[in-house]
Image: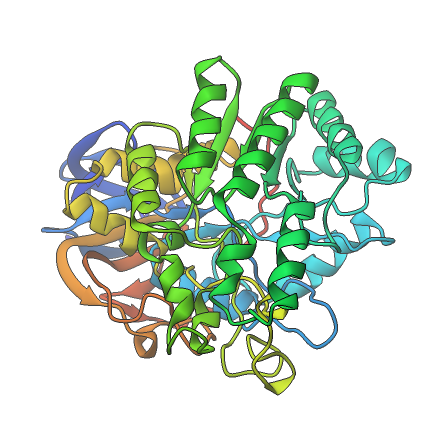
Length: 472
């Protein structure tokens, strides 16, 4: 039969899984959007047979860092091209990185600069969070409300890092702006003064190897800051989202608040499921290779890993993100800052994970730790809703963008950096075997990964997404 010009693409025999449903059908696409779900759809210009594969909504990575401006001497390894290429190969079709304000600078200037970095580079769609580092009266009264109205409806604040942290009063002021303008605040919750005190003691004792990073940021500093952030949210009466939660003590605080009916959301990441504090001692107790796993909060221990898995399955967490922070290891602008091993407090924080995020969590499905529906909810549906991109993103439904990933649920893959598509010279998950792998990726109906092969779509085909009001 001749192709029906009304359909650009049909995915045949799809085993569709969303956050709430599972059904078999053909998927019809026109103009980049899903226009039909049914059986025996007419022929189309392009057709794919999905027999034996799962058809899942493209992943939404709600927390990643790409080409973010760094202090002098530091540089992220991934820009918007290499980062979004890796994301697509890992089954993610939407990313939300951060436009970061510098102290003393305009928030609007940070947004304009970040658009310049993304334009002509991204191969999948993207939105921006903001990072508010200097909440001056002009930012709070004019810039931030204006940017929220323009589609930047979520922003991050820090309770640690000298160049980013806000005082308690500043935190309250930012939360108040979010309440007045129906925006969502993401919180990096660690107690800065406790970390500084512990760091000074460790460094003064000559305990400077990467493994001491974990001792400088113990569970207690995350627990205390999490409780304080929850208290601020209670005072202002506004939802917040605690990002990259690492273990049981912060989880207990979040569960306590949720049990009281407070709208406290939480996110965790692959490093808290697969890495431990011992990984920061790689290469011997005082070896430097452990710098590859230095991130904040740090990975903890197997007991905390188990607590994070439980919280993923019992509803404490709403979002599973990569927190991709790509610094090369063997690089004078990366983990070996200045060309040499650094004391732990000078090692650039962060681990790469934008391509491995989904396979690492999907392995939990294969091992019976969570359901397919929970996987979709945590990695696509809920981040799309929470960050104002639903129903365009986050589901397979008529009217949604045709962001669809075909998964082989039984394929076993041993993760190796040589096979990944980011620009980072290592992965902290080297050698881990996972079951389940994204094979084919469509972004707005365009085939960009086929049977694991990246098809070189045009750089810059990714579109900026104006975020709507968060749906908590």
